[in-house]
Image (cartoon, rainbow, N blue to C red; front, side, top):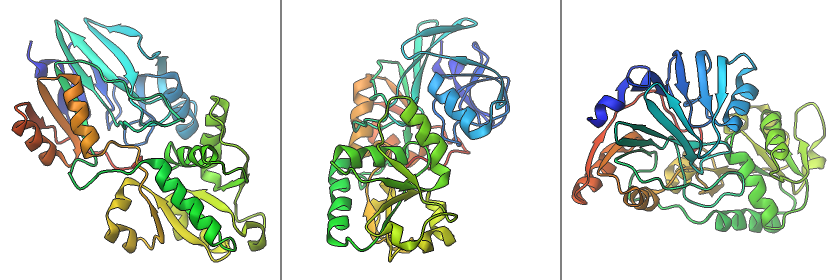
Length: 336
């Protein structure tokens, strides 16, 4: 069968007619398979949701227990039959619970990557390349300019700054799911043993990570309702980027603004955001990792989703690999 008969774009998202399900739909549908818990991929209101248990838990924390009519947990590596189609969830290395979804029907195998990264991350299972006929890859950082340094190098820069400016607080902007917990764990792995202060928006998810056996060390609240400026001298404070524009951020002593994101590779973007210490830490693959992954899958055809689609499609064509953009809408950069 043609691959486009097995999966193809619809306004709701990627649809599988023989299995009658959508992958990461952007509108409520009867049956949704979800790759991970970021809000641009995992939305509430579906009649039924199939995802890893950790993704289901995260959706419950973010949307409440009634986020879907029914739910079913998929263990990594487990094959599940949906009508005449089999689906298998494989680690994506993006955030806790994230998975690629392998879809097989009548001898055709398509793997939808969701979002993924190749750098090792102690807060989630590492990416697992899956051989397939068609690989659907994201392209958030799908330009040759994006080559991420190792995350330990970036954390070393943060710790060097805390040593150089012990009288100042360091405010680290990091997305609430995945990036914030990764930054905390990187700090711990680098030997930072002081309490890390966190914005209240990070508390539920960070507690969940701790409950899943991911040691983030001692976390203390950094809320407007408690503490004074003197309590945060020399502290590292982690919060969602949105919090840095409100009065919460102004209560800390002479803060140094930091932001952990792959977009910090673009100096002008850091400058426009008032970021003093840009930390290039991304939960997405960079250009070299995207192209290496495509080759590892052995896929004869590549479909490119949200991001810099045209450049990656052109690279595939130059490598003799058939490729096309999917032009899916509704996906943002929450977990960059």
